[in-house]
Length: 290
Image (tube, rainbow, N blue to C red; front, side, top):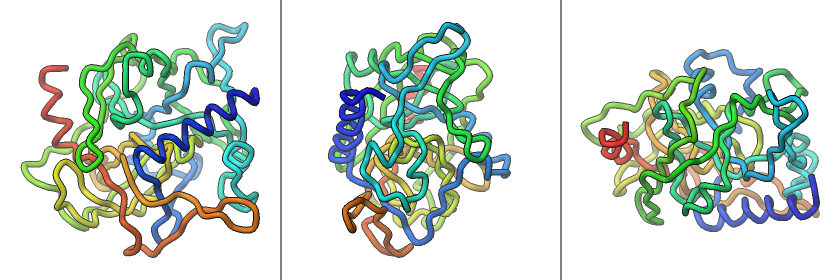
């Protein structure tokens, strides 16, 4: 990856961290690469997850069916310690999202803020590690979609934060996620999972979270193991696979230790918790869009 692009991507991730609040590990690190995920509920969510990448990260190849992904390692890009999990994996995404309609992507409002940022964003499906040690360096062209327009967006630092955007064409070979159908707030203790790109990494499934509180307007607080690149990640019900919300804010990601950075780890009940925009606020906008 070119030095200027490395700096730009690192700055982008750090900028999003500053805007949306950092993220953290709660208790045990429950993130898994996709080759290590067998639960069909989780794999279905991952198949509907997208990595948000800057347009310059993807380049066409001589073979029109594929595109190269230009990304430095997590360690080189973010200065994490070599002992940090996934330190040698590429960090190519700046946010995450999910498919909720044939041409609709749901992400965090702070991930796509304007028509210009939409035009500079591409959505990549299947950005995962499907075989141990085989990191994604290319994407099938059929799995890459452009951001056509923002159809709804809100960014409240103390409330709901999400964007619904249209792709340049209908999505094929991936199914939209089902939204949880609730008449009230999500129950405290509900078991949650999350799919997305922590610190820009290939998709990880976090399967050890739950709802900590649901008292706030527009969002609830959960214990997802999440990072800056998880902004926009689909947070789902581990039993049903239904989409319960969108990851938007949280605790500090990293702490500096012995010349490099390591994940900030707190107890399962410690820290501030991670803010997740409640899917009920998203659902209110969909009837007019679908």
